[in-house]
Length: 448
Image 1: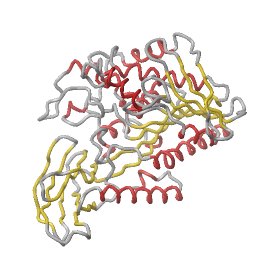
Image 2: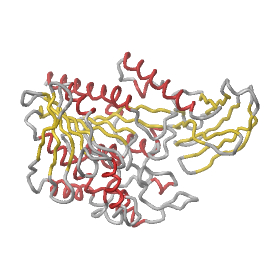
Image 3: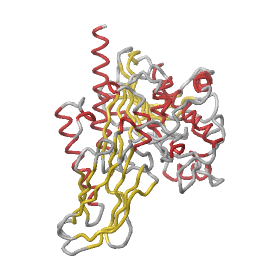
Image 4: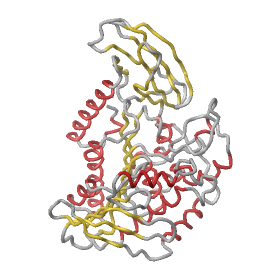
């Protein structure tokens, strides 16, 4: 395990994490019938110009020879190498190298010609630059207007008590009106009898899709002496059957355009704008609670939620820490260098070269690029990255991560992880990071 990635984790927690990763990787390999793969750098990190070697073997259950089909995908778009090899009792090795910072994924399969991602590696990840590093004109002014709009009308939240299902914790279904668009809707939890001015606050946001707010994360936070809200992504009612959320999405996408692409032709009309506004409003709600300690504010989410997390960390100076698992909406200008961008890849590209084909859309969506928010945040952050994730690819996340100074970032890089955030990761290492952040902030306050 690369100590540059996990050096700040407590040894006992590091041991737990290594065990978790071993189990996760074993499960990932089991999903690839007949094949196992290893790399000579278990952390998946190489220097530019260094040779990386993949070693593929058949599972013990395989006793006959097979045809190994493989390809090497560079930066999510380009086939760097491909071919076939006979594989039997002896392992097959495939060696590759990159002379510049970048990302490779080994895809492989047996006999039928189909290949699936098995493992990924990074070359000089801390040197990866955004595809379009220049900031759009008026970036700060645009977002200042959004903050002013969100706060134009005083928020009068509606709190309806619900059963927390845990003794000692109060919970509410919360609706927070917005000046424009759907309200913030979520669940809020606080310890019973919390002393005013003593509680850190945590805001949980949602990834892509449609679903209700849930209880486990905010219960965990409240059980540890914090106040917490989990807000759903779209401002619809909580606690509804799956059919309700399916129908909502059907209605929203009635014109055949996926919701994260609706209105992308203008930064003023892009669907994501109201989502980011609601995330800011959720922060305003929890920091107005009498229980908040006035000092510690953490935001946590995955994928599309990770994008919102990065955004509010850059837009609201009250945010002191954040956790962004496999975040989207970063390096949206990656197509300028022929590299795959982060979800939802709103800029049309040439399928052969990966280059941008619509400069007008690129000019608008750049105002939402997490790269720019990371340059502005005062917070410290934890990121997870899956090296076979092509939804929120490693290069896009590293382009944003590298805007933070090393002392304010922690990374968990998993060579065999796809676009996922295991519950065990969120409830253990992710939440432990939040606890560590709270402890650090309290130590700093005690010395001031």
